[in-house]
Image 1 (cartoon, rainbow, N blue to C red):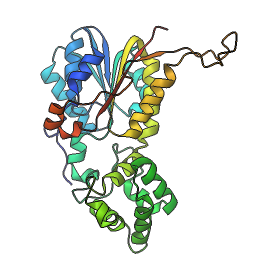
Image 2: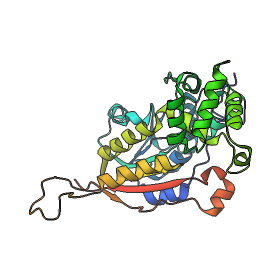
Image 3: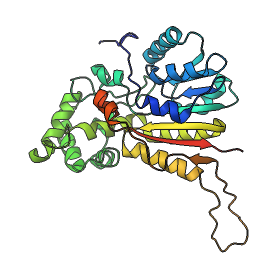
Image 4: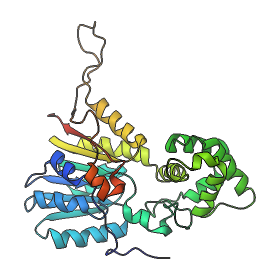
Length: 321
């Protein structure tokens, strides 16, 4: 099995100019990159808060943490940096471990990092043959192979439809169940073959790779991505200092919907009926949403980095307590 080295772990930061503009990190502040990856964003965040400030980075991938440590030490040696191993869904525990009273800038750059996609053995890619894994962390016991081979047809259909927005979810689920009755579906290309057999030929000629939505849906299920995102966002709001900025880059509508919902919910004031003489709900806004519509990458960036094409950025600011 090929092991990704720290030298190979590179990440082109998506919408970097927009991140720096919206977060506006200042010297002496505390910034937290909740999706550290190869530290493409963190290098620039750390540079702007150094030397008095603190740059926190969170990742559940050991190689990413090693690569980020080396890069930050090399490119921003004057910065105070602390990297934490974990999942941003456990942000409360991680920030307690970091012993910080609050954070001024949070960044969430969601989805799978380029190195994870480009390492076939991780099982994220539908272009390379590899075991059906798709775990972002080795601490996760659930694999895509287990989902594909043990979930019943109804659950597979639900996952593909809800997490992948797959119009042929029922047909794909049925084909998977038929295939695994003869032998387990164990590799990425075996799964791709199931999908291609299930989708009509005319539909396969449009909309990109026919297995893209299936792989997205399985990845979300394996890593519990939507639950993790909701928990992490709410924790970030709790830890944000007054005036603290929270920036989230998502890559599909399910993620963006959660971000929009959490930001909208926490920016609402009184929800009592207008005919009540006094407020009884007690709701007060704790966020100011700066992006009513998500920001997107420029045409120039999309041309240079195609993975930025689907990026959607939302930003909110923590109000005074």
